[in-house]
Amino acid sequence: MDKEFSVNRNRLAYFIAGCGLVALGLGSRRYAAWLPKFLADYAGDTLWALMVFVGIGFLAPHWSGLRVAVTAWLFSFAVELSQLYHAPWMDGLRHTRIGGLILGFGFLWSDVLCYAAGVGLGFLVEIVIYRQPDDTGSKV
Image (tube, rainbow, N blue to C red; front, side):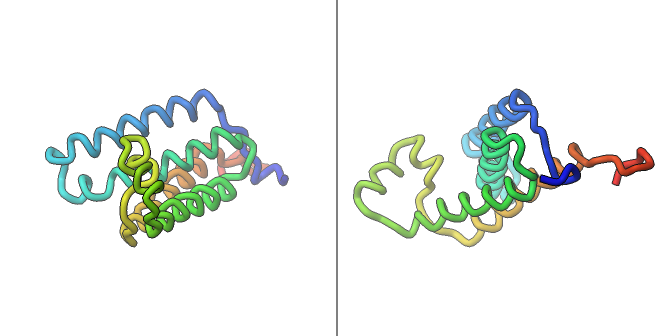
């Protein structure tokens, strides 16, 4: 892996960020009535995808940001596509609290856009944090 594309993520920081994202995501659902409609409608899915990005970054700390982002978006999209499948056993999983939070209930294109936004946010934050200085010592 080229040095300019390598990332060495701090797993503790990603764990703490993941816990914070879970709290924010759950809060965005629980307190949706107090949020502006746009945030109430889309924050949970966006934060869910950002959590997937952070989770994959935690599990693969040396992957490039782009590889983490692509993997996170593909995983999120696969989960969304799985919502088109309604076998009784799968719907039974979805009707548990944790299953509903992870798997969701019905396919929505707006969720796919939220996933792109969440993963994109994670990728942009990593670009800012892990930018490599060029030969002159300034940020690229």
